[in-house]
Image (cartoon, rainbow, N blue to C red; front, side):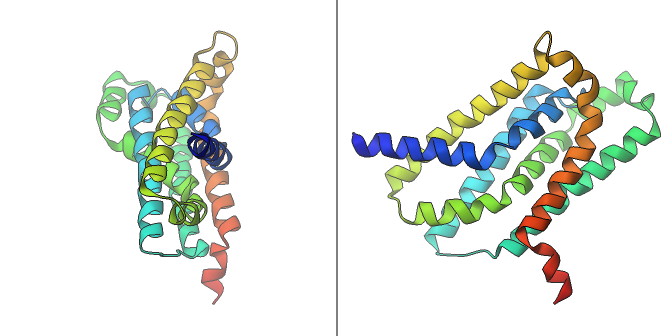
Length: 203
């Protein structure tokens, strides 16, 4: 029993410490009228699942992925941020067209976008999860997975609550989608910098 509580504690701290910045990204997605809540939820879970699966696989085959190469994932939020910024520069008139709004919302592009940003933002987490999983049993890894599922739901719920809060949510909904491009570009740049990816181009 003590071992179970220990694993639960490790899992909670591990998720919270490596995904704290996801809250701000989720706030931006929930505030963007082009993204339906369901798309954000699915995309976030797909991204977290991909990171978890990659870490488990890496631990099983004792694969160590150089941080510099993982940092290349930072290009995804930069590209998405620049695309959104360009769309904002084009004007908000086109964004308000009902047919365009439904067309974008109905597609799977938004889900992929959320998943891609989640993976890029947590790409360096693989190097943290991998050694931990390598020293755990299958049962313990399964328990950590369950905790990750619950913590992801908590993260999504908190972000959605803040965006829709009567007082706090108003400015987030009004200006959140305008801040998203800058947040994504800054996030991608930070990922590239922290991972030392820039050094790859100077070899």
